[in-house]
Image 1 (cartoon, rainbow, N blue to C red):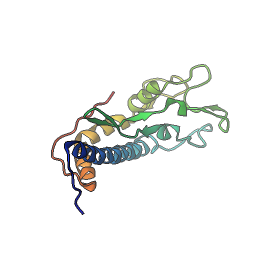
Image 2 (cartoon, helix red, strand yellow):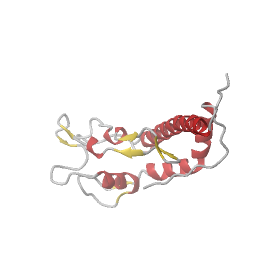
Image 3 (cartoon, rainbow, N blue to C red):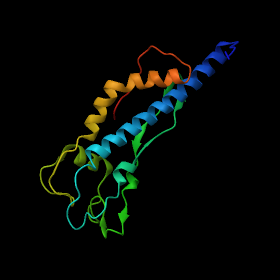
Image 4 (cartoon, rainbow, N blue to C red):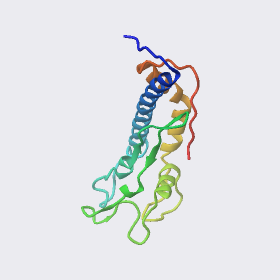
Length: 168
């Protein structure tokens, strides 16, 4: 059934509602892809050593997506990381990421995981980089527009313009 639109305000409201749904679905699709990349790139190596008897998955679970918000003519949603998710794990009797003297900050942990460490630091051994973020940025560059178009069409809004995004 077709919707009758009687004014520009109704058109604006109707289109924005559909764009919000498409942005919500797109950001959820991207979050799922980021989590899949993290599982593949970060958690795919075997666990070794007596202290690594289990994984916390705190890093994976620290990522979330906001609900879309309308700011003037812009609909925006964000994938972000909750650094407070990295907590003391008493079952392991150690800090999950970093240690009591040098708790690790989210940005540093991101860099350690993505880029690796040349030498031991902050209770991390020298490790090879696991470029999850680099891979995610490439994925977005190659797929974001197509994912957004698909979600617009799913909600009855066939768009043909490009969307913009940025990494901060």
